[in-house]
Image (cartoon, rainbow, N blue to C red):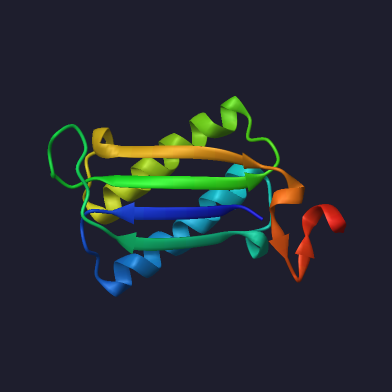
Length: 117
């Protein structure tokens, strides 16, 4: 179950939030080769500063059970950055993405960890 957390320094109208979350969910599912029914995406607004400036910026964190290939990280970085730049009007050079690979024993769902089956 991949989880993408999107944080932007710009507040977004609800319609833009919905579009951003929906399109990001599709990109993550496609990029990781997983069903979108298992993808979770959230968005939040926060005050941020990158590079000693408070200009519009974004930080994304993608957690996934299992490995994310180098090619997958590269493609997702490009596609998610383009999406966030377009929908939230954030320059691509002010978007940062962190990828995290999570062990099955460290992810709980449906009352048990994924390692428990």
